Length: 312
Length: 312
Image (cartoon, rainbow over all chains, first blue to last red; front, side, top):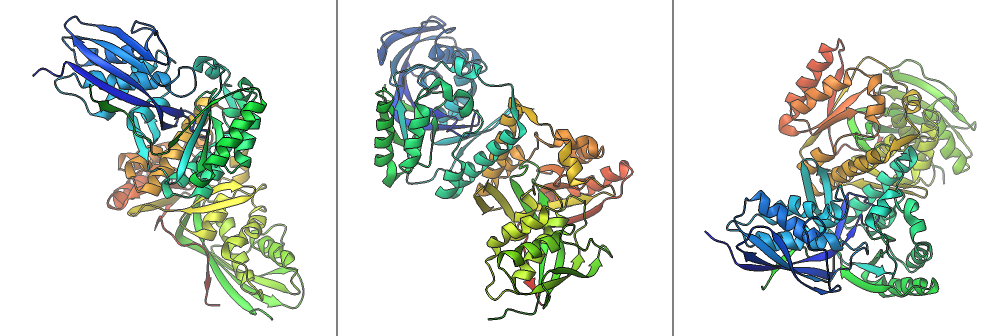
């Protein structure tokens, strides 16, 4: 049985690490989406079609483009007898720490999957989306990919074999994100990380993460506040964005539950209770301006949706 | 108003670290209890009365006895105008990795508290119980103390200021514990720990703990199984008990959710679903015997009770 000839899917931005969960937690952030339209073509292989949205051009080979790489991996895995052309509408900025490469890879995998005679379940697209994300960072961090795929707050419980679990997320909490006009490459941000960390930091990091996860799953804002602090990675990367310290202090001073880099930055996110969110956003904006940076602000509920098919 | 002249309290054994939560998680283990009877005396100070149970004698000064130290700290904090004599019935073995020193300290704090004209809330006894535990290990690990105090599975979310939270524990899970006839001192077990750990271990440790906590709070046995593995400390201590590796392999082979040192050992605990518990216990017992060790076996539900007053 032949599949569809054309399909469209969108996937959200995401907040990698969620501050306290380096390489363990990801959070969908549905303030921006990448949309990929996949069109079936007789010739095997993957090709880039139209590019729109935040950019006019994108790399056009599966060795350089996360969407094309994800599509190619999926087509190869199912031994497809056709090729695809992908048109990409970028809503998620690249090199922003907003999971832009993962959003494209996940949307591409889902759009191509919809062309198959027997599409896979969404969760089973993970290896192909990861094959796409590998173009951006090798080995590919899972956090943005699983968040864009599943939506909400997602835990990578194991990588081999993969065990990914969407966690219950607390109601009444908002993710705020500021994207300042500076660039930090994921590869560079990973390069600054030390090979060893003090035992004391490892223990305190695990304590924060345990409190954060317990707070989220039991709906305990005080536990979330106790946990939402990155002692492991943020101190090693803070110098990449001198504005982080004053912005974080402003966010916490205005009542945020926590504030840190989104992924490897430069974007900075905060969690706030709904009734504090406006005050926290104003404080963060003012702190960025005081540092001479005009940061793009956006917000989304913690329970943001993951990848979905769109009318093609 | 004068308080009571005599009070008795008991506190349970506990499983420090719970395998994956070094210095972060504690679990009450109500297969054994220490009981402390506190009797008010006119002369200030703390004195040791009768000693019974597993031992005939105990150190008899507040500088050397965790129960006396906890009692002294509490009396000093409330500026008491009386002294106490403590009789101690030891049900929890010392130097077993079963929280024996914490059980005595917690029971003593609770018994003396009951003598006060205005007793403190149970949770507020933490600093005094910690002052007792400090006799055993300085700085005092919190895990056994908070478990003996609150019962069940307890998270130390923050130490300064203290933020302790009893977590929902999954139904249908049993703690099995084997105490082999060997000794590992807490101080020595902490002495073998490296000052630095590889970043990769810190991340994987945090991943396991996050999965375990999420599994416990959401009642997901597969997540508990994914998480209940100590990558941080057990590898550094395994040489202290060569039997650990075969016993752990036997437990996991028989279906245990996880298996590791209880606290700093030598006791070894496992978690098992109720319908697997007998098979896991048999497998662990056989593995200890194959190593030439006859270990004392006991079991208790995960939701074990904490400290409580007894008829005096």
